[in-house]
Image (cartoon, rainbow, N blue to C red; front, side, top):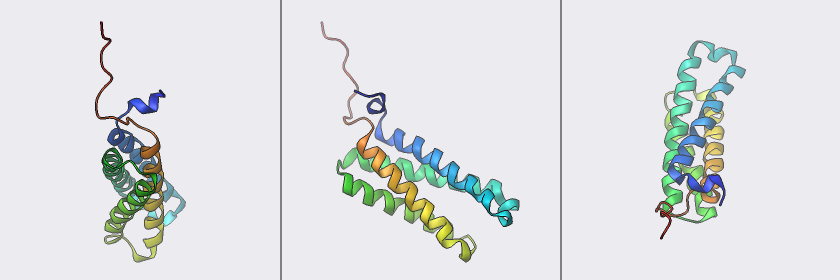
Length: 127
């Protein structure tokens, strides 16, 4: 049993989503016009990643199917990204949507393949 299988799927999704969301937000440094709002970009990208990861992790705990996990991940990531695009510059639509869907894809695959497969904790040694 690998150490990844000891982590509950929602927690794994939360961790991966947060890390990928932070990386997504930090990629805004490639756009000099975002400099005045970088703190907000990083904050919202990280929050979007955390919420996406947690939702995808809960889905992975209930539904054990890689194809459905991928679809759910992309869908959840895209829906939350779309919510962010409603308040952003329309020119940034795809710059927000594509990383959000990619985050969902990655977390969807990871939570289906890794993470705790049962809801019960390992039992104590029997004597």
